[in-house]
Structure formats: C-alpha cells, structure tokens
Length: 534
Image (cartoon, rainbow, N blue to C red; front, side, top):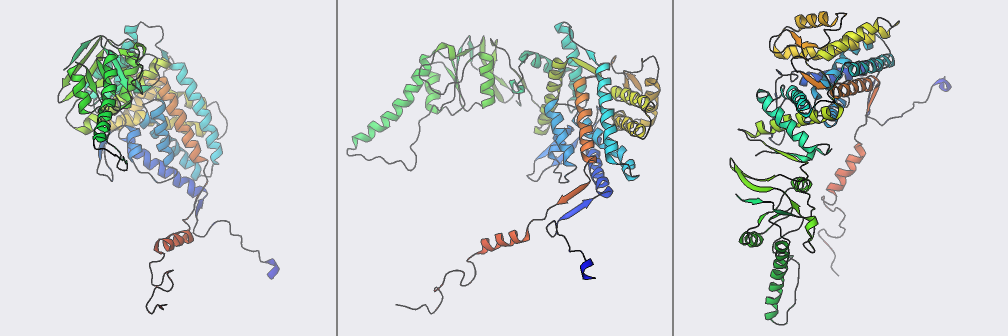
C-alpha cells in the first residue's frame, strides 16, 4: 500500500497564488472590459471629460484616452496591456487612443461567450488575426489620397483632419481657428521628424538682422567651493585672487561682445554683472533658457551651441531678420522672425485656468501629430464611425463565404467594430439602435454609395462624413485596429496567472537587520553592569 502512494511534488513557493483555466481567462476579459468602460464616455465630439485627482493633490481634467490611461494607477496585469496600447497609439500616431482601448475591450467582450462555451482561444485568435488583415486591406482600398494637390488645397484638407481631431477636445468650440494654426506650424517645420521643433508656450527690445550667440556656459562670478583652501603669506595676495576671478568673467564677456553678437542666449545662468555689462553695450541676453528652446533657436537661426567663448567665428553665430521682445499678457516672449532655416514654429497659449491650458496643449499635440501623419501618409478615410461600419459590413459579408466556426468568430469581430458609431451616439445622447440601423441599411447598398456615411453628431441622424469633412488619416485606423487586435489576442492566449509571494524569510531577515543591536546586550559583550575593571 505504501509503495502505491505518490510523493508530493512542490514546484512553487508556499503562498504562491495561481489561477488558471477558463475562469482565469474570463477574469482577465472582465478586467479589460472594466478599463474600457472608464474611457468609453470620452469618445467623440460630445464625449465627457474625466477629472483625475492624484495622491500628490494634482488635478487633471482631460478626455484624452492616453492621458487618462497613464493617470489611472492600474494594478491588474492583464488590464495593463490596454494602458500600453494606448501609450503606443499616442506615440505612434497621436490620436485614436480612446478608440484603440474601446476596440480591444469590445473584441474581448465579443470573445467572452465563446470562451465560456468552451471554444479554444487559439481558434478565436486565428479568426481575429484573419479579420484584422481583411479590415486593414479594406481601409487601404477605401482611403483617399491627398497627394498631388496644390499647397492651398493640401492645407485645407489637413485643416479638416485637424478639426476632426479637435472636435472631441476641450477647445472644440474654436477648432477652425486652432486647426489652421496647427497646419501652418506643421508645414513650417517641413520634413523635420522631431516634434520638439514645434514649441507650445503657455504663455521690448528689437534688433534687425542680429547675430545670435548660443552658449552652454555660465556667465557669472563663481564662488569658491566650501572646502577650498588657499594659503597666503601676504594679505595683498588676497586681492590678486579676487582680481583674477573678476578678470576671468570680464574676459569671457569681452569675447562675447567682440564676436559681434547682438543676442546672447545661454542654457546656464547669466549673472547680474554679465546682464549689466551686456545692457551697457546694447546687447540682449537671457540665461537659463531650456535646452529644448535653445535647440529650436539653433535649428531656426542656423547657429551652433558653444561650450566655450574662445575663437567664436561668424559660422557658429545664428541670424534672423528681426528679433523682438514682446509682452503678451503678464509674460514676456522673445520672438525670432524671418529665420533662414525656418524649420521651427511656436504656438502661444493663454487662458483662464492652468487645467484648461494643459488640456488645450494636449489637444493641440494630438492635432499636430494627426496633421504630420496625414502629410507623411497622405491618405484619409471617412470619420464619424463610417469606416468602422463599412469594415463591419465587409467582414460580415466575407464571413458568409467561410465554412465552420470561424464564421461566427469573424462575425463577432465585425460586431465589435460597431462600438465606435454606437458609442458616438450614446455620448451625444442619441438613440444608438435607431442610428445604427440606418447606417447598416445605408452601407448595405450594393452601389457602394453608402460607404462614407457615418453618425451626424449635430442632428442625431446619419450623414456623408466625406462631404461634411469629417476625415482622419487612414494610418490612425490601421494602427488602432492592429494594436487592439494584438492586445485582444495576447489576453486570449493567457490561460494561467502566477503571482509570486514576497519571501517571508527575506522580509524577516530585513526586519532583523533593521533592528540589529537595538535590544539589550545586542552584540556588545561586556558593556552591561558589573563590568570587570582591570
């Protein structure tokens, strides 16, 4: 009997939390759906804002999906994947962050009944990937190119893309004004890839054709270090040391003046002495200029940042047609106009509250990214849920040609895509069922004329999104569908979660070492009472 007993095998440390199987997968899906529900109401022009209050007391008001996802302190390991795809969508494309989270949540929600019925997750994953590829091909087929247009036409088209992005933001009421501003800024930087060449400032001197000197050195008297030691045999020597310090700073300032520069900017401090010295010689100076601003000025004026004032030649100095210091509200700004390189632009934002300005800055970032993507990829698709409905119709039609279970899975993928127009209706307070029925009927027309029809936010009906200039770059949709499908497939492929406990012995040792020597007689022999005297 004893020989029949199997020895117990212990693989994981005691206290390790393991959960696996169908229940674990359903739990992960529920967690992701809960995260998607948080950002669900922020979608579209009538989306609501979220007020997030963190542990440091900072308050953020935003309806930008990526910002909300970053500020939510999500601890569930599966739900964190949705945070990652929102971040990647933001860095890759700039807009569509709410869309990508919603789509991933909806794909999982549609997969849940199949998982509960015992369908193997790999079958779902295979079908979802097939549907994703078909959807992306269809988007590319439906996309309209803006290449070959004149600059004015292109500006107008790009402004419409920017306006579509801004319509769902806090500054949506002034979207036409901001859209044209964003397009001008992006065209100003041309093919420059670095987004930091567009500065957004949250809010008098004048020189014509000045030479501009850019420095990365301090121009102030340096006090000696606390531990410096100088030994003097004669008190008069002390004065020579003080004079040497002054001579060093005057020598630096003199070299800056001799370079012929009329504007001196430094990333490090420019002291009172240097400021007065330059002012007496009619030279404008500014210290502690942020590194980003300094690089932007260098790129625009053609100057090079110097780490020494020795041998300053004309080639390293920048120039522009006019430099002016202007007061806007309570702030003073240095404006460089007519720059030879001209590959930079700055937008100045002013407003009532800090939260409003910060949200406006986030909104403009999204619009700038969208215009840059539209310029580079030059294809746009109809917005307002039109492209989602058209892909959904196409996938349902394609599913009928497939035999077997995958027909159901592709159908569920197609149904999930309808979440975008449905949520747009819900957020605007319209009857989603009624609007979706109208859209399905329009998109089902064999002539294909219904393809650009989406939700009309103003009337609560349906309208031609292309005719109403509700456009978005095709790369936004392609990226969103790709990322959402990959996230859903990744979550569906996880069938076990193992959570390792913190080692109790390690915690015990840490506590013991922290308390070491605190008790009586703790490691100090012979120190107690009755210590023997020799």
